[in-house]
Length: 114
Length: 116
Image 1 (cartoon, rainbow over the protein chains, first blue to last red):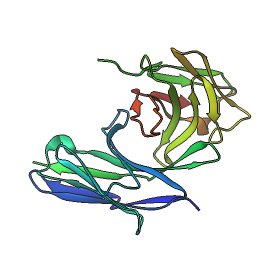
Image 2: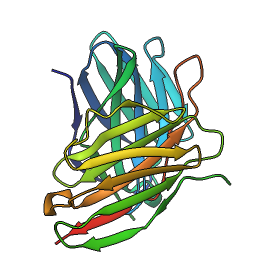
Image 3: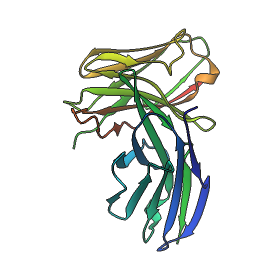
Image 4: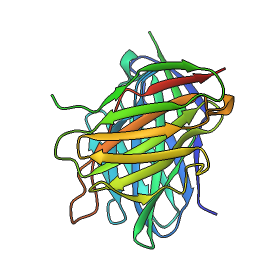
């Protein structure tokens, strides 16, 4: 069964600290993995997209890693800011029978405190 | 600054009523998605279109939901009749899919639907 699991479910950190969010998946055939940031009351915003051959991708203070062998991805946030408080959603897509299937994690809710 | 727009932003309706949500994708994007988000289920893909043709609507309850793209600048999601369990935030997203298959998705602000 195609599944995406994210951990932790929620996280509280102090401003300036680093943190890492996890995404484990059992999706086949794997096409790509995306990380989204969703502020409260807003639509998700894409942070990174990673294909099978990519191990790491950065977007400013956000760095995503992908281990296709273990089917794990992480999102590392460096020097956190108050504006990083949001939900972070991992989405894995599979391309099968001519269409993409998107499997969503339930997200990690991050709170950055001053 | 191109962005996806959705109307209405909020909708409160009574059970049994018809609800129509509208989305204007970013000009030039060839793929449009409809998502639903609830606290319990998280984000779910309902349907998506490529070049206005429906590619996958397997996430959508067919008996009451319908999605269409009458033209390239408008996508609609209709619920008839609506039920309290349809209460959620409905997001539209658009993207430009290239031959590489990888593309960015841009989400609209969502329509918050409450069915009483």
